[in-house]
View 1 (cartoon, one colour):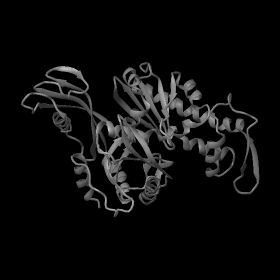
View 2 (view 1 turned 45 degrees about the horizontal axis):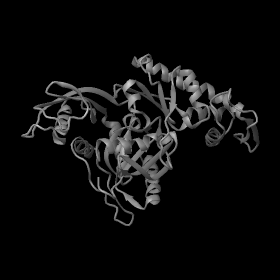
View 3 (view 1 turned 90 degrees about the vertical axis):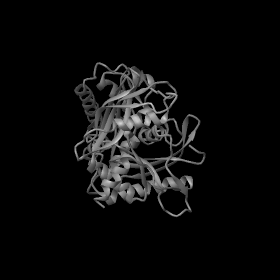
View 4 (view 1 turned 90 degrees about the horizontal axis):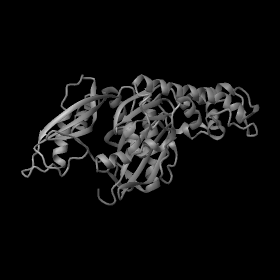
Length: 410
């Protein structure tokens, strides 16, 4: 990746749309720009209004552009949801080099071979991820580059998604004037910054407590073994507060962020605040303890459902590394303590260590940057702000096929 090139990620969430600009720095990445906008047209992680979503994306991207002084022409876009499925696949190729040394081209060919599977017409391959490579029968190889061999195989899994859901995401981003460089599965992206190699190897559940939904992903032996979505998240806490305090939802959200505490034991009766009652201008005073009586039961329910989901996936007793949680609601006081009590396992809250994004809600956006740098090794295209707004076309392979399919709808 040349100097002056950038990677841009786009995290389209239920409550926020975030555009993050990063540049390579040694073996890692520096976050140099962040744009954020309130998400509209999205419910429970799914797009329900194209125009409102496009407006939110534009606002977030323009915010990031102004911060850094460049024009964003393309971005890597995070995707998740219950429509995502993982399917095992296998690819085999002959090593092409005359000296039998395995190179980047051989790895790309064997991954492309793993893509050759029959899929229902309503599904599309988003990505293919190698579990392990096999060189002339020798298994357990993580990176075969530079090794000598005649036959290269890969055990991989295909990440597939609903064509309709993919179409909606791509359409929104492109209508906002941004070219989609590629789609990135959010649990994989988040794992690149939220999880340590040991956690992924021993067994860990990565939990993203979002606003409209909670995603649960299990990693073991450094491989994503399963992912699932629970249709409940931080917005439910806000809704409970609005009903309990008889106030507007916007006021309830502010109260949650400023005074929220997930545990009755740790809530203070000395911390007081006032909220306007809905329907009149009268303000009523409450304490943090009063607020915790509303928040704690809902947080307990969320983490109880997470545990049940992991049990359903068959991993509850095989997670030595416990649970790593992220998402905006995990910034709340005592949220991790309530999670540990309900999950009955070690719990850690993941926070990106980058200036300007030290918040659990930025794990997905920063994770996309890290994942792309590690797996794709190429950047999104950016231009100076003064440049004409003409997106640079990128990508190929499966994404070219996806675009061909999308043309039928446009």
